[in-house]
Length: 358
Image (tube, rainbow, N blue to C red; front, side, top):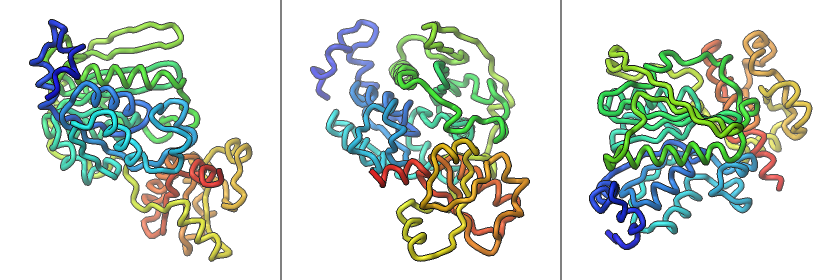
């Protein structure tokens, strides 16, 4: 190891060469290379973590650029995993990278997480966070969770050395109706950077053994008032008794059954006159940002159950939203209502359509 490279941190009395060696010997999995995952990845890689795993199967979209600062306009439409790996390898060629070109699902979570010492949850969605929690409890792995919304963020380290789990703080996942959609749940661009960097700091502390880890503590950050607040919470022993993953994590944003790319859909639109596309965005979104080439029927997600009779069950149904998250939820909802439907989630949604036009 090139200790000269890390000299600015190894001279710290509380850190030193021993802590640096622990970083080199450690393996960290980052789930999601977005607003939270990018800053965490950049600093963990720069500071000398030996092995870094990355779980990501999304593409770079124009709406990512105001907060996911590793990406540029030239990366639009490219797979995030490819862009991230290229940049991180240039940043630190000595790191061992383990890329997973997939979303984290209940089918692969245990196998992937088992390969690492600690997990960084950069997904910032409830279903994936509960999935990570349950997998980490089963595998006895700690995970660093960050969440953001508007001008605020929160952070904690769960399942650390037998400490509280995520379910000790939030026992049950909110329903799909209670989860803000990807457009309503806005965020000031700099907030994910702050929380993502704090996640990296907690990983460094947990791995190297320095400082006090946010174990049993929830850190709340308010960017408008530049204020921090810490809330203590306790272990609920029943939440450590998880032996297997749930059969479903509801609207798991990262678990998609049947995908279709925008490029594939455009070919279908050229070859077929009648293609059933359901746009599950809100009426306002649909009117303000129309997609004429899709010729979609607008049925907002919260109206879908009550309007299922408007769908032609004899033809494939392609679900569309702004980025692919709500349309994935729609796929799951319709699967439960009628398992015989042929359903497809349009990956990247309207954002991907727009990126291809530029």
